[in-house]
View 1 (cartoon, one colour):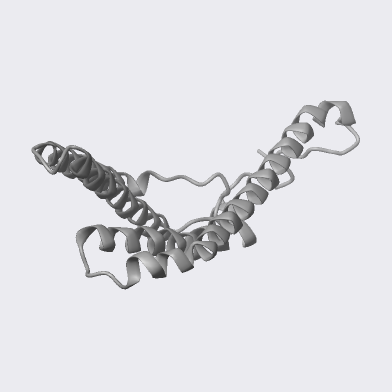
View 2: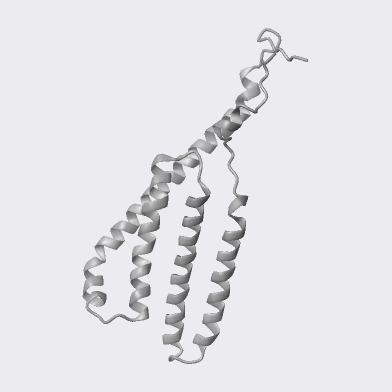
Length: 179
């Protein structure tokens, strides 16, 4: 059985497609807004990083290496590296799809950033509570949180989906004008 649709028999009106075209237009505008916000956020982060570099050199570079200093430097460097490696190409060039390895590396990078933020919070709480017992309650919480995040990322990496079909999948789609 063949399905032949003639352009003479079906004449869609412009108003029939208006809601769909409005939706496509709104998605495009929102995508562009997100892109501009991401670019301005990256610019603000790099600006802040460069304007505080002199204070960083004065207060941290000449000191001995401690856990707090390591966490501070990782926080400064890793966030910029993740932005440079993952966000900038995606914001500027908007690739058609993400590979699982890119998603996995970015996800693990975010988990490492969570470890850094959690460690910074633990160090601050430890200092605020006079270097007492609170540290022993917070460390297992950090381990459980990060472990759960890493487990979820690892288990769900193959569950990511893409709206756009891959070129090899386009050949399998039914066509209206095929005989």
